Structure formats: structure tokens, C-alpha cells
Image 1 (cartoon, rainbow, N blue to C red):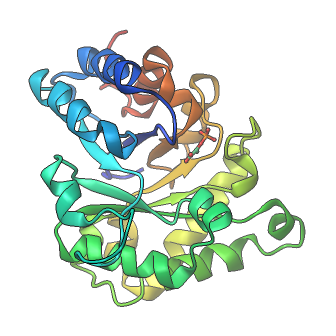
Image 2 (image 1 turned 180 degrees about the vertical axis):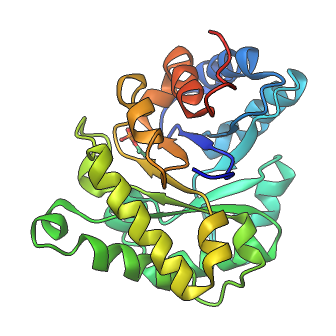
Length: 263
Ligand code: PEP
């Protein structure tokens, strides 16, 4: 993974309630104070951002607060949507864009994903751009083309300087929430090809320094093997991030050898 700092994010999706979100944040924060080997972020549901933020700050845990989505306009008559400034008011530092559940269940296009990403960067947030193929696309040999298209369109008009605030999450749709994980070799292959797209879009330096993380049924039992691949810089974790002990094991699996702290 060269000198890219590993990143592990917990995407809580539409799970938890006020009490359990607080307990989960406390459970993670209790173990992660002053552990700088891995960048860790949690992405709670919108209504719990403020309370999770105050728990994380109170514990001085250095865990980044993330949001699962954002709207592409700064403010105005967009009922139900949430702006970058609102998220920043709640302590959010980074957002997910293009998660497969938003692309495939909500119907977000590459253009919308790009506009959300651009708005977030313009307003100073970090972004995790999620890409990945469906099962049908994999079975018909389109994996690399789909990833390339989603990366190129998602990053349209993003400068090399802004890329320091972008992480790409390769998340094959067929692996998300299904218990089926990409093999380490298949995941490495996809990551390497995404890195090659970055080299073509920008240059070798951007390609070598951008973190590309894997998502799709990562658990403590398979994390180490996935994160050991040279182009896999950590993970975006859904189901397994709802259990603090399991999530912490995954975070530890991402730490460079020598920095793995005890349980
Ligand atoms: C995700 O939601 O980004 C994800 C990878 O989910 P899971 O780990 O549950 O497959």
C-alpha cells in the first residue's frame, strides 16, 4: 500500500436509533483514542450526526464524522434534502457519494454523483466516491468498463489538487450486504485497474497517492487478506460496522504491520 494511510469507514446505513448509535460511537471511540495508524470514519444516519459528533469529540477519539449522502445544491427549495453547510454544522468532515444503494435503489446517475462530489469538494469536505459493477455486469465481462466509466464521470472536472480529498471505494454491488466477498485477487485486480484510470486521468503521482478502498461483505475474518493486497488501502464496511468489537478488529487489520495495537 506504499505510504498511503489506510482508511476504514463504517457505513451504518438506515440502522441504529438514538441510543444504539450513541452506544456504538462510544464503543468505537473507547478503543481508538490516540491510534493514528488508520484513518477511521463513521457514517451514521443524518438524525444522529450531532449526537454522535459530540460523543466522538468528548472522547477525543480522532474519528472522522461522515455523512451517507448530500445534496448538490447549496440551499433552497429542495424538500427533504441536506446541504454541505448543514452537514458541516453537525461536524461532518466527509461524505459518501455514489453508494450503490443510491445508484441502484434511488436511481442516482453518474451526473448527479459528480455534482454531489463537486459541491462537497467546493465546500471543503472530503469525499468517498463509491463505484462498482452489478452481478450481471460482472458476468457479462463489463467490470472494468463500468468501474472506469463511474470513476471518469464521477471525477469529471475534479482537479489533481482536489484529489487529495477524494477516496475511491470499489464496492461490487453483488458483494454488498450479501455475504459474498470479492476474492482478494479479484479485488486487487479491480483496484489496480482503477489506479491505472487515475494515472490516465491525472498522473502517476495522483494515482499512487489516492486511497482506493474495498467494500462488500468485509468482516474481521476476511479483512486482513483483502487489506494485504498492494492496491487496497482499507475498507468501507456496512453490516460489520454495526458491532463495535467487529468493526475494531477490521480497523486493526488495516493497520500497517508494526502499528497493530492490541485488542
Ligand atoms: C456498504 O454499505 O458500503 C457495504 C460494503 O456493506 P456491507 O459491508 O454490509 O456489504
